[in-house]
Length: 194
Image 1 (tube, rainbow, N blue to C red):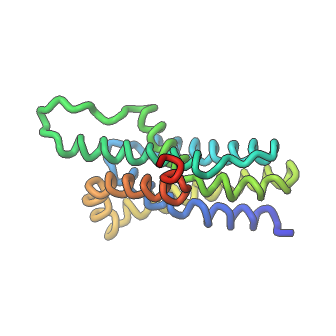
Image 2 (cartoon, rainbow, N blue to C red):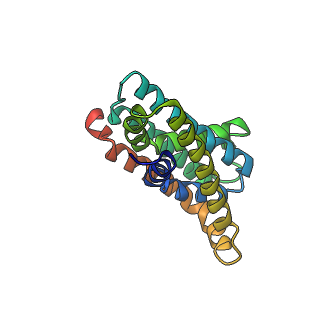
């Protein structure tokens, strides 16, 4: 049996490494504060973990195609960013979400990007006791901090940071739209919709 900490690290890395690119986009966007990104990422990971735990406790696996519907969130956020960037400054466009809205945006994108998380975490948690689940949750919290720190460090790196910040704002909407499309495709949601 794999030790719970080793299991947690492998589960986290296999399902959350793609969050690094999403986080780079958020850290490069001057409209988002570090605190909002951190809170949103932790809330998203927490929701995914809690949903997986609930699914494992009642032996219910949420079909990935339904979870994949959350892929519409990053598409909507990306389209909104594109529309805001394309509008003239005096066009009276709707400002990006403020405060909790930005935290919610990061949370939604994290959850949308996590369809594979639920399908991976549920069976792993279903076979573990309370002590192991606590260790896995603690490792996930530490790994989330490491992921956030890495994304922040890359965005503010002396050589890499300036290009990421300069181009990240323009690229982020396309990354979000592509991420949403990938989620819809990968989860099988397109077949569900059509």
